[in-house]
Image (cartoon, rainbow, N blue to C red; front, side, top):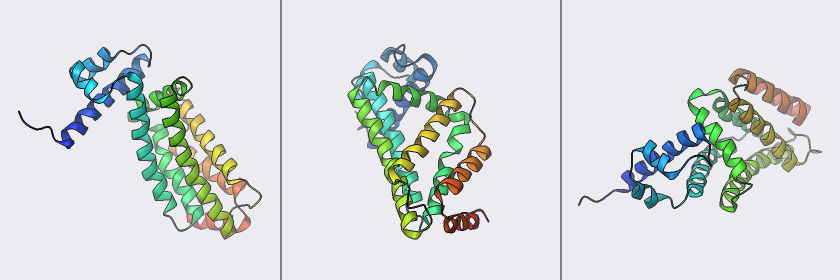
Length: 212
C-alpha cells in the first residue's frame, strides 16, 4: 500500500476544510452535519475523522489557518522600518479581502466563528489568540510611531489597536451583507482616520510622503 506523504495529507485536510467552508456558508454551522461535509468534499466519513474528531475541531482549524495567514501579513507590516508606512501597509493588506467575491464564503464562516466562540472554549481560545496577534502588531507599530514622534503620545496603543480592529470587523460584517465599501473607499477612509486621528504634524508629513 503506497505511503501517504505529508503533502497529500495536507492536501486532503485542505480539501475537507474547503468543503466545510462551503457547507457552513450555505447552511450555517449548526445545520451542517459531518455527513454534509463528507459529501461536499467527496471523501469517506473515516477520512474526515482521521483529521477532525468534531465539527468544532474543523472550526478551530479554519480559525488557526486564517490566523497563520494574518501572522504573515502582520509580519510584513512590522518589518517596515517606517511605522506610519507599516500602519498604511496593514490597510492595504487587509482591505482587498473585504470586496473579494471569491472570499465571500470565508467572510460568512468567519462571522459564524465569532458567534461560536461564545459557546465553545476551544473556538474562543483560537479566535482570541488570532485577534491578539493582530492587536499586538498594531500596538507595536503605534508604539514605534510614538517614539519617533509620528503618533500622538497621548493615545493608548492598545485602545488604538482595539478600535482599528473593531472597524475592520464591522466592515467584514457589512461585507457579508453585501454592503462593504469598495477597496478604494476603504483604503482612503482608513488612511484618513489614521492620518487625522492618530498622527502628529510630523506624522502627517510622513503620511503625505507615503502617498506620493
